[in-house]
Length: 320
Ligand code: ATP
Ligand code: MG
Image (cartoon, rainbow, N blue to C red; front, top):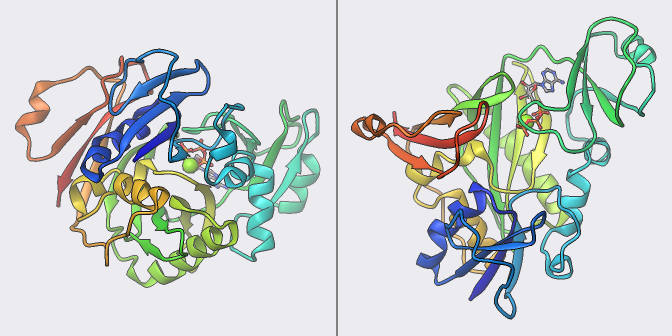
């Protein structure tokens, strides 16, 4: 069976690591440079691909038009989620808990929303943000939006958690445990699985992610980032793809998120259940490869990328 991932980053490459074990010949295609990549390779094999693919998936939600859009699974979900405005509207429509919000068009003043929401605002560009980019904190009147944005109430959360789950073509769903995420400068630095003392919220988190996947008819792995407010969970954002906070599953679960995603999109059976053990994932950010990492007890995953400040170049998974 032959599959294609749109996007040429490390998420698709990590799908490539498990593909051959499933009998899947996995190709990746960069929608920006129109070049193909094979399996786990980070160097392109040119602008010619094979004749056809049995299925097409993606490693990111914001995608320029490609020749593969007609076959792309979850296309409508990618289009919805790549824009924060319909994404927030969807939470409201499904009555799912999220931070109070409003829309800000380019050139709009945030004063009215600041007065209405009554607290500081986090203004987020509707499209293209990641790792905290395209965001502004607004504490005083006078802010004028420089892009089409949404503005959310600043939530005084206790911690940030996320849930990664999968939905098969027949609607069956499986979930990993809630994990706790630690950020620095807007970038995820560490994930702790499971999130300590969150067991009582597992059902609520599964209800939220399950409702989103069912409503969208989604097939594959999806993540939802949540704020733990002590007495409630609020959705921060959803990611219709394998997610950095699920990388621990490569070494901490019977079946990792990359394999779950491939199985779901390829129409292969999901496992009877997900088994896992407590694991910590540390991102390697902007650093050169250090062989000393290998002397620790963790498993090193290096992406073969040039280190640049703020760039994720690998991660280490360690059992707790
Ligand atoms: P990612 O790298 O996960 O794609 P992102 O750049 O898309 O991130 P968000 O996850 O929306 O953006 O926000 C980045 C971080 O900013 C969050 O992890 C959280 O720490 C903080 N943040 C976002 N929205 C709020 C909010 N409404 N209240 C308080 N903090 C917030
Ligand atoms: Mg986020």
